Length: 201
Image (tube, rainbow, N blue to C red; front, side):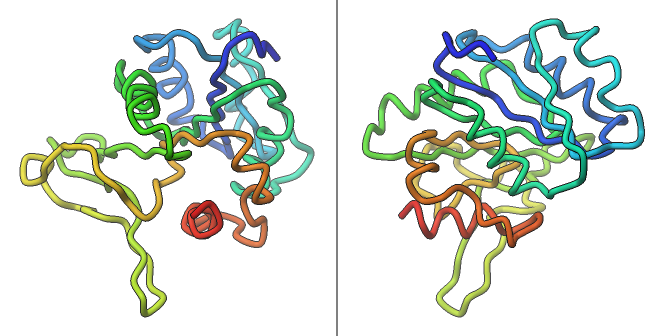
């Protein structure tokens, strides 16, 4: 693992053959170049990672012997990523805009007291409909994705504070995640990011 770079992008995959190549291809066109990518495969059986290292020589694949879940697989990658300052998480069905990492780092440099950052997620093939702009937590105990299903043109794209970034496309300081014990692995997948935000706060 090349830790001469300061950022590691972690893609946790499970049977993502339909999407994974597009996701990894999008990372090849990032404006920000100081990063390393690893794919953690949760014991896929669709051949989705069989030719990844052949197609993308700069990407390392970590193959797990069972499906341990999204939270645990990310924790495994974060623990392995010694020497990296930032961990950027990207779902295998996400396609990163060319300025994705650069915008996250610009936000980090402008907001030094913050240790995690989120993205605006758009639904693919939906002509500008948002999948979400972060997670909201209500005092009643409910959490939901902010701006889910809202047309992108109806919201302001100015940076602002959110309760939690959606871990489908987010960036965290590695040392801070480790300080709070990483993702709670009892959340096999979903809401692990909201729980982590509680503890990071």
